[in-house]
Image (tube, rainbow, N blue to C red; front, side, top):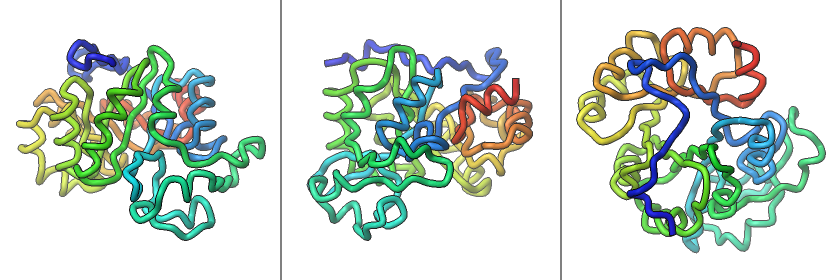
Length: 259
């Protein structure tokens, strides 16, 4: 078992206030432009492409399995109308994820993985950014999965649920934890809470970010990450604003496009 207290988490970034010159490009749900999102193929492709970090979404099934899946219901991704929290994993595990327009046909048939299976794919020096899609009730089931199956590479946690991300930080104090938000009013309302917390920063919808906001968080030693950016001009602006990480559907392509 990995001793978390002895682990030095390295996400290959430093705070903009500490000399950062370029952000990390994070693969959104893996390499989801080419392979179906949140599938093992999507992450294996991301690692093969040399992506430094990739993001995934986790949810809890009725039988308390931590799965890698974004939606609360299955219709959009599988064509089958089920609700994750009321479904047993064995009943949904073999449902193929539908290919979107940009996905390659060779990835047809990919199914819903467990987080433990995805953790096993992280190469040394790479980071899996885990988005908690539930509240803190997932933590008693998430903790043993992390402790038993995280063997290599690095992890970070992100969540829209403020109590969930605080719970993650409490359980894994050495793991970077970032509060997700879509709205500047929400971020401003929570600023003092975040500044006084042990959280490492915020991960924001890129449209609400400006240089002043980044500098405000950097001044209290908090990083700013952003999502989901697929346009080089947007990425260049965000780099100028000082973000530490950019989540994108096309991490390799976008990184090359802005350099």
